Length: 153
Ligand code: ATP
Ligand code: MN
Image 1 (cartoon, rainbow, N blue to C red):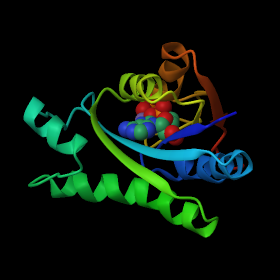
Image 2: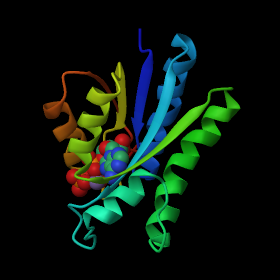
Image 3: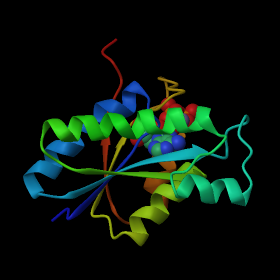
Image 4: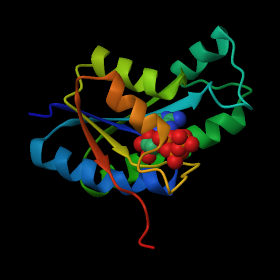
């Protein structure tokens, strides 16, 4: 079970809270782990051409060094936590609509479990779930573990 686990992360603290649970499952099932950062083309301040989307996919961000820093900090966190447990983590970078990219990745790579945070960077706490997580749940038939990342209030 859970041969391959996908951990999508936007680098937020709430996403980071899901990482330990994801890695604990990975440890138990000896799963292959992928950490995925999506450069969100839905975000108002991001406009990417197909050439740039291709570069992101290959991990060569070129001029886009601000995006690169954000992306690699997000996946690097998962790599570091994985290393503490002796788990190798594959870093994945994509550009697009996050929920679509996450669902497509899960399908293309036969992911057995997707582990997401309940919220992310914008974290409007009165909503039970962030929109990316809600849309992932509506876009995939794969198993999804949603980790509630809200701090105690
Ligand atoms: P919203 O984006 O709807 O304003 P939010 O930022 O609080 O709300 P989401 O964006 O839904 O919440 O984030 C929930 C989870 O989805 C995150 O913890 C993370 O696991 C995943 N996620 C969100 N954005 C991305 C992204 N760009 N790349 C990879 N994973 C993401
Ligand atoms: Mn978000």
